[in-house]
Length: 554
Image (cartoon, rainbow, N blue to C red; front, side):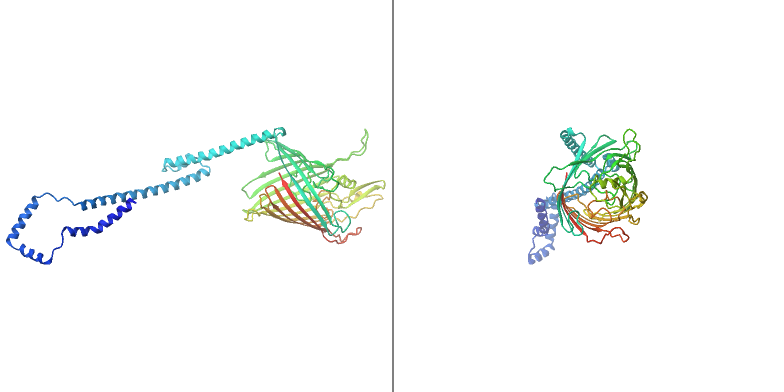
């Protein structure tokens, strides 16, 4: 404000200075000026003028007037202010350059560079800049230290609460479901009657890492104990108590000397990639699995895996007493899978999986289903009986060696909440109808069509259910011929296990972080076999089945 006032005064004085100079030598009337001019020509005037000049030469220099002194002071002040303004501009430019340098150094620090390296790379930078970078890094280090301390305290508190349970971590879910079915042939009950039922599921998982090489765990789940493909419990029997069974119990070994290898034994979750075309989601196999996996994160060829399987599913002995004349080898599945994953594009990944499952003595499975030892899916494979009327034995018309190939595409659509997954699965029983020679004697050989050996699965999923507000849409088409897969272990919510064409439509909404709402619609019917000569399968209407779910995960 003072500087503005001074500037205005200076401008006023500069404009007023000529006027003040005229006032020091005021204008005279024209007539006296002519008289003075004439007088100056006279000798007396010349002598007086000479005398006056001599006096002036002898007189001291004239002192500047007050106005002149003020003008000089203002001129000096203006010069000083101009210099000060220029210095301020230079300081501002230097400060701007310093701020830009500091911002660059901070970016380098955030990228993980050392402070000394940053200062050495910029020797012209000011010491203050280096100190600020160091302070920023120190501040970041302090924050990390605080987070680590909080984490350690939380871990200590949790360990205190879980001390009695050892190194286990727990998870699980509770699902409530309302389900109806109508049209076509019903799931159960009289034909033409709509079905309504309420079901629930409870699962508890406990997993532990015992050390750097061994881990393991167990799971408990609801459901009928003899049903391997469902953990649902129907509300149907007068409020009686319900059973909880062992769903998993396993140990996994990951040796330090060969990190890609994992050996898993017991009753465990699938160690290979599959769909429900061959293996239902709720089934947990038993036996031993060896898997070797190699991963390359940023390469075109991102994953290679090899899985070997030895899965006994029943032990049956004939003969008795001390002699034990004959022993039937345990029924088992032996198999393996080759896995590959490719990065086709920055937004597209492709996975290819090829598996083969060979079943030894699978007739024990058919006998278990006939005796009711195995519940769940009904028997829809070709079967027949041998033996006398008093002692009939059920046999499959086929042997079983299933080739299962899967292709999967994962696409980043550019919308974070809506990833896209496309999957195609083709399975074929390479030994369909190869057990007909077992049917001898009085029992007639069953009808079996070796062409009914293939199964197809096509699936599309859009979206996910991870965060609140997420939505996932899905559609699946299944076509499974009669002897393509074992009916006991395939997906159990279809119209029937095999000899079926099935559509599935689903939508799931993540209402809260731990609560998911879901709707699934099934539309399925039996396949009609044109070569069937011993059965009277007629074209039927689609059986419609709707499921409404509320799922809570913890």
